Length: 458
View 1 (cartoon, rainbow, N blue to C red):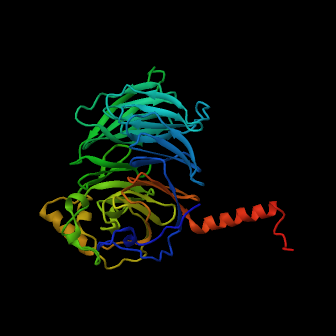
View 2 (cartoon, rainbow, N blue to C red):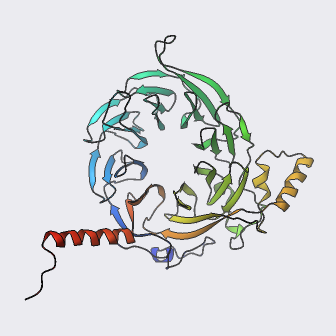
View 3 (cartoon, rainbow, N blue to C red):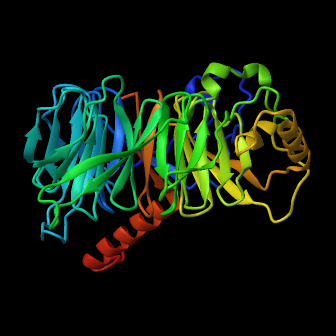
C-alpha cells in the first residue's frame, strides 16, 4: 500500500540552518501526499523515460533497466545485458511508416554498447558493440524513422538497427547532447562547440543515407551542459560557466548574446544570505526546460525564468535548494518542479504579474542579452537595471521528502503522479492523495456491488 510521508527537512536529519525557503509541516497546496518506494536497483538511478501513459523505465549505474507500471508500482520487466553503467536511454515508438507496431527501448552503456529491447516482452532485439567510445546521448527522429547515437562520432541508424551513416571522429571531445532541428538537421554539443549536421535521406540523386557537417558555432566559453528546443524557430544552449545562448533554428544565428547568470554584485531576495554562496557551484546551468515561450533554467542552486519574446528574466529564486539543481520541468498548469543534490524535490507556483512591481532585476540578467562591455553600453545596462522590474513570482508550495541522496531527475504523469530517481538507489512513485482516496473508495464500492452490497447484521 502507499505510505504517507511528509515532513520538514529537520525530521530527516538536516537540522542545519539554511537560507533556503521552507514549507513547514503544513503543505496545503502539495497534492503528492502518498508515495510508493520501488526497490530493485542496487546503484545510482540516473535515468527515467516514459514509454506510454501507463509505463516508464528506469536505469542507472548498475547497468540494469526496469520497466514499471506507474499506476501500481508493479515491476513489469527486467532488462539485463549491459556490463557497466547505463549512460543514455530513450524509446523508439511504434512506427506507421513501416507498419511496425512494437516499440523499442534503447539503452547505451559505458561498456560501449547499445541494446534495443522489445517494449512488451523485454527481449533483446539487437545489441550493437562496435562503438569506439561510450555513447552519451540517443535521439529519435520520428519523421525520418531513424535514431541517432552520439559519442566520439554521430551515427545514424534505422529501426532494424542497421547502420546508415556516420560522421568523422571528434578527437578532443565527445557529443554530450543532441537536439533535432528543422530541415533534417540536428545540433550536437561537442565540448564548447555546437555542430550543425544535416541528414541526407535516399533519393533519386542519393542512393544511400549520408550526414554532412554544415556549421560549427563556437560562441560558448565552456562546455555546453544543456541543449533544448524552445519551438520550431528557436533552440537554447547553456554552459558550465552560466552562459545561455538563444539560437535561430533555421539559420543557426545567435538571437541573444551570452553571459553569466551569476553576478555577485546583484541585489538578492531579502531572505537570502550572500555569504552562503559558492561561485564555483552557483553559476553552472545544470538543466533547461521550456513551455514553448519561457525558458526555465536550473542555475547552480537557483531557478530563473526567461521570457523569449521579451528577452529578459521575469522571475527567479537564487537559492531554491540547499545544493545544486539537477533537473527542472514545467507542468501543464502553472507549477514548476525541481530536484537537487540535497535530496529534495520541490514544487513551485509560477505566476506572471499583470502589473509592474518595484523589485529590481540584477544587471547581469540584462548584460547577457546583447549589451556589450563598453562604457556606453554599460550605462545602458545601468539605466535598464534601474528601470527594470520582475514580472513574475516563484512561490514554494511543496517539498517532497523521501530520498536520502541526490535526486537525479523525475517524470510527471498527468493523472498518475510523479516519479523520481536518486543516488540512494530508489525510485519513488509520488501519488496525489485525494485522487488515490477516490480510487480506493470506487474500488471498494465496486467490490461491495459485486458481493450484493452491504448485508444487514442479523
